[in-house]
Amino acid sequence: LFVEQPLGQGNSVPMTQPQANYLFNVMRLGVGDVVALFNGQDGEWTCRVVDAAKRRGMVVCEAQTLPLQTPPDLWLLFAPIKKARTDFIVEKAAEMGAAKIFPVNTDYTNSDRIRQDKLQAHAIEAAEQCGGTYVPEVANIQKLSAMLDNWPEDRHLLFCDESMVGEPSRLKDLPQGPWAIVIGPEGGFSERERDTLRNHPNSHAISLGPRILRADTAAVAALALWQTALGD
Ligand code: SAM
Image 1 (cartoon, protein in one colour):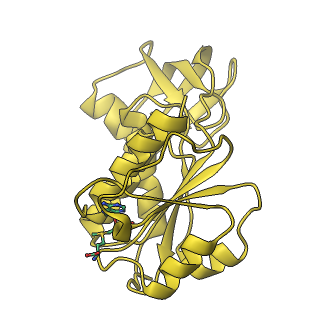
Image 2: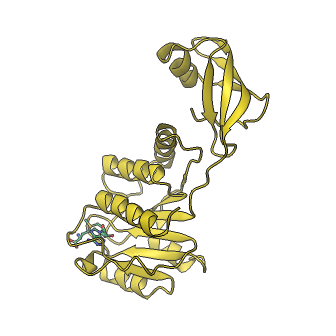
C-alpha cells in the first residue's frame, strides 16, 4: 500500500479514510495484523495495525522488507491521446520502470485537459500492483518543443520515428547513460518536429518494426526494447 508519510523503525503511520476502508473493511485486517507499506523513498516496510476503525486507523513500522529500488534513469515523453489510452500508457510505463513520465503537447495533439493528479494516482496504483518500491513522477503537460529547447546535455533521446518503419532498429549500439523515449500522437509527428528530433544532437531515431503501431502500443514496445538493450 502506498502512503505519503516517512517510513522507518517505530514510525506511526495514520491511515486515510480510503486506506482504512480498504484494509479494515475490504481486506478484513484488524489490530495485530501486518501490512506492507511503501512511499517511493524508504523501500518497503512491514507495519503492524495498532488501531483499526471504519474510517481511520494507525499502523507502526516494524521492519524494512525491501530497500528502495530505483529504476534506470529513463524518461518517457508521450503525446496524450484518448483518456483510457493515456491512462494505459502511464500505467504500463510505471510497471516497466520508467523513472519519470512527461505528457507533451505536439503539433498534432492539444490535450491540455489531462489531469496530472489522476495520472499520478495511476502510476501509484501500478507501482502498488507490481510490488515496486518506487513511484515514477508524472509531470504536468508541457510543449515538446519547449522541452527540446532546454534539453539536458547528457540525456539521450530515443526518437520513435514512424517514418522509419521497416528499417533496422539499431538498438545494439546505443550508449549508456540517462535516456528519454519519445512517442508521437495518433497523427504522428509533423515534418517540423521530425526535423527537430532527427537533428537534435542527443537523438537516436529508431523504428519499432515493420508495422505502424498505435501510440499506446508503441510506448510499451519502446519501453520493452529499451529495457532489453540498456535496462538492468
Ligand atoms: N499517423 C502516423 C502515420 O500514419 O504515420 C502514425 C502515428 S503512430 C499511431 C503514433 C506514434 O507511435 C508515432 O508518432 C511513433 O512515435 C510511434 N510509432 C508507431 N509505430 C512505429 C514504428 N513502427 N516505428 C517507430 N515509431 C512508431
